[in-house]
Length: 69
Image (cartoon, rainbow, N blue to C red; front, top):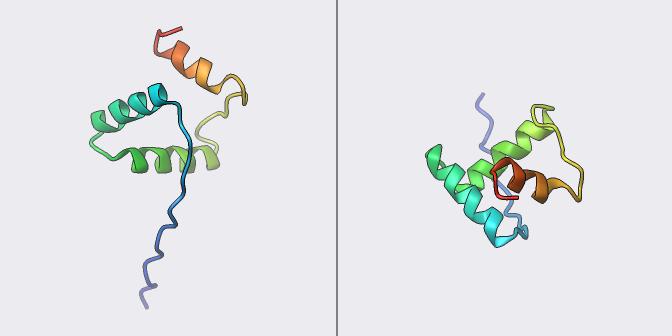
C-alpha cells in the first residue's frame, strides 16, 4: 500500500538581506530554490551532518568564510 504524500507546512523566517543574497547565489549554483536549499540544510543539521555555529557567531562566521569580514 502506498502512503499518501505528506504536505509541507509553510514557515516564515527572518534573514539579513546580505545573507539572503548569498543564499540565492548558492541555491542558484546548485540549481535549486532558496526554500529547498534551506530545507536540505535543516535536514543535514538534524542528521548531524552540519555542525551548528554559536548563536551569535553564525552570521559573522558565514561572512568571514566568504572573505567579507
